[in-house]
Length: 468
Image 1: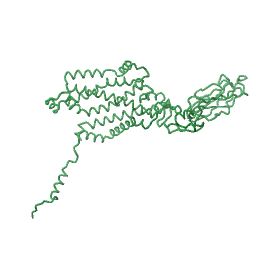
Image 2: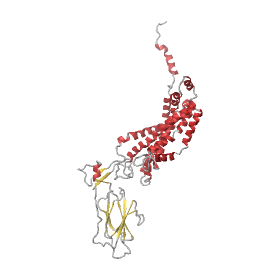
Image 3: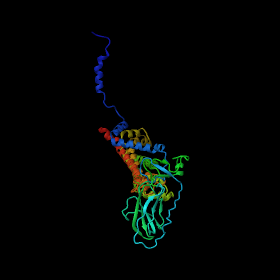
Image 4: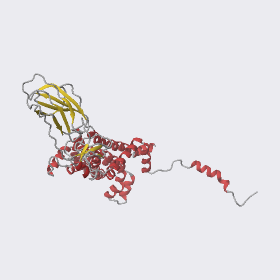
């Protein structure tokens, strides 16, 4: 029985066959395929996230962490990373005269063979980081006392520590210490003397000064109002999650400010000299012949120039003396001396591309050399250029850090990661965090850009794409 209309389901088998024969993987462009392969490289992807986090830390961080990187907190000098601390208010100015025992002679009546150690060694008042006051009972026939301070327990007359003072007078029974105190245990030792020599008679007391802040300073910094600023009141000090440096400046704020300086040099200089290398290598590779030989011999001459020597010459030429910032001479030296590496890479790529058929077709159509270079050749070297740039950035950052470390780059008080490392080396044994954090940021940044460069090199490799 025939019918004039054919039901749609009669061709369902054809639709099913077409679905089976449909290409399983859609066609991807060069950049889409590169991105897919980059995402499969976990190290490169993590490095990319680190670079983005570093950008957020540099650009957005100062908007969230608003502490002035140059502000000094003299109450928290060289503090290690810790939670927010409390401090007790003390008077702005306080004078204290060492007490004198009027019933005890100032000088001994004779020359004693032995002397006892002082008794009743104790603190007067509440010891704070602004002052520690010691008092004791005088010793019979004593002619004076020697006061020492240490951060570890002494053993007799051994390891007494820092000599603070020698008091000539057996009737002096007190001493005030104001020398760079911190909120940590101190061992104070008082040694009895006859006015000339110290005897084997020592008394030791352990004192832990309280964190303190002057009343006027707390009011100026907004930690307490003038009405409630009573002596002895506890206030909460500024929070320093990465600690402070040797001048009491916030390490986190200085790391953010230093990131701007380091990354400015690490990004601006490579962008400029890589661009110069692209143009230079593009024209050298396209024209070839004698023109290419002359250009590349000049590039070899630039490679042979000593970078450090030219850095010194540029500083002298611009009148930049010791202790002054050498950012501009550093940028100039990087730009003028580091472009040949990019020029060589681009030249090698152009030598391969210029023999392609579409380049010959463009020539036959009357395209000018500059049009062919900028429209056809250089766009096909973007992969090599991106990889070169990702390797050039950490190299420039490391160069800035090295020059700042040896005092030829960024000079204090302007922070950079290199100059912060230079400052941290001086206190690395007693306060390692001052060196650890800037060195850590330099290492992470250099490693992240290098791994990202490796990932881009693999993702943009056309041979690997063909294998895939």
